[in-house]
Image (cartoon, rainbow, N blue to C red):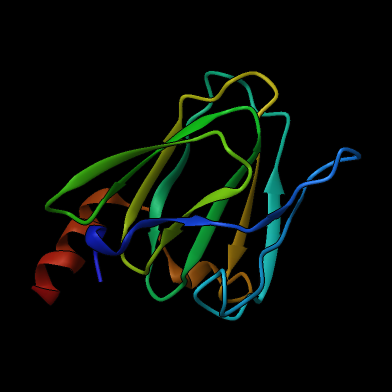
Length: 137
């Protein structure tokens, strides 16, 4: 897949004066069955998160409050996305390196993932990631 498969996912919104409702349905708005949902909060503005790639896992990352930057990289190209709209998420296919930073105060982000947590799914060493990507090309 690679960096060209990274794309913004826009969720439909039901507008209501009492509060808007955004809907994410697996395999319709999110391009895979959702097996895990997690969120990250109380993030210091100077935090650096991510710093890894997934072998087979697919994800969509939503910034529910605040703002953040995601830098995605496939070993050849690099692209930066700023997430700040809770109705807009970033789809991450397998084998895309992700670095997350540029957090605004009060940022909360949520991830919809295609599989349950499995540590062996992660590539956390940048050199090992680059070697794996080069071997596939």
